[in-house]
Image 1 (cartoon, rainbow, N blue to C red):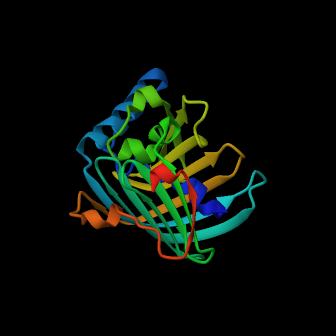
Image 2 (cartoon, rainbow, N blue to C red):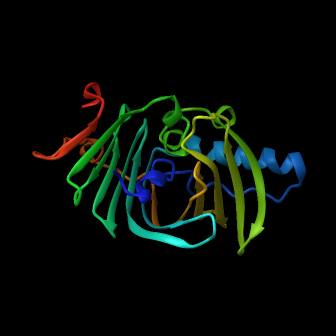
Length: 219
C-alpha cells in the first residue's frame, strides 16, 4: 500500500500565493477570504515549488517527514516528486492520478472521480468552483501568519479541512487534515508562478515489471 505521505499529497497542491486582502470581520472576513482564493486561481496557469511535509497524528506526534518538488499545469495536471524519505511520484494527467512507489515497485492508478475533482489540487489546476466545493472562512492570525480555512462540502472528500497560512503575498504553510484525523503540515519554498513546464512532466507510464493496482480502463 502507498505510504501516508501520499494520501495527503492528493489535496496538498493547494492554493498558493494569493493576493493579500485587508483585514475584515465576520461575514466580511469570510467573503474577503473567498475572493482572495478565487482571485488567485483566476490568474494561475502553472506552478513549481519545493515542499517539506510532516504527518502528525491526532495526539500531535510527528509520524513521518518528507520533501520534494511539486509541479502544476492547467487544466487538471499536477505532479509531486518525493525525494525523501522514499522515492515516490504522484502524477495527474487530468483524467487519471498515478502513484508510483519505487521501493515497493507498485503503481496505483485512480480515475479523477467526483471526490478527487473537488480537492484543492484539482481546483488549483483549473477544475471546479471554490464556493461550490468548499466552505471558506477567515482563520485569523497565528504564528505571524494570516490563515484561511477551507472545509469540503462533499462528504466523500479525502480530507476534512485545509488551513492556508500566508505571510504577506506568499503562501508559507498548509495544514491538511484527512478523514482519519491525521494532519499533513506542508511548507512551500522557491515558488515559481506561471513558469513554462514541459507536457511530459504530467505523463506517466508504469515501468516494466511493477505491479499496477487500479482500474484497467485507467491505464
